[in-house]
Length: 157
Image 1 (tube, rainbow, N blue to C red):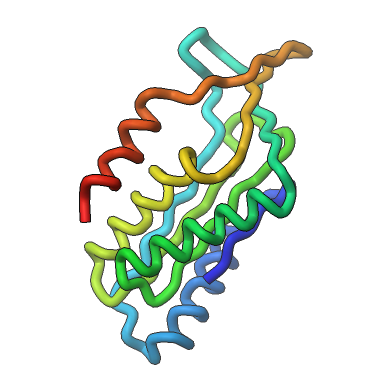
Image 2: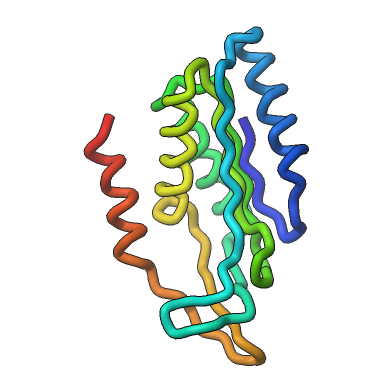
């Protein structure tokens, strides 16, 4: 298992290989599915076009919260391994911002775990986002849709 927070872009293939290697060590070849998700920065918001985003975090606290989420997903879905990476700093449109991966004996657990990681990440990992256009920026409020997505996991076992 792993949880990373970094400014630099990431290589999806390297993250997949790291996840698979971790799962192979734990499960001795008993992994039947790996599901990954990569999120990109959108070039728009409700008000129109943007040039990108800037994410701030508390070093140490953010990594710890992300690792706790990975551990919770691993336990909840009986995963062989899980991983997550979130970028911080200034990230332009269409650049990679987040990656999650789940390795499990069966595909349903891997798919559910990847969805859980993404839905819960916005609620449980301390990250603050500003959107920018040109030389202006604006802090982004939490979305009701993100709250709703996280809430469904609290009622689902």
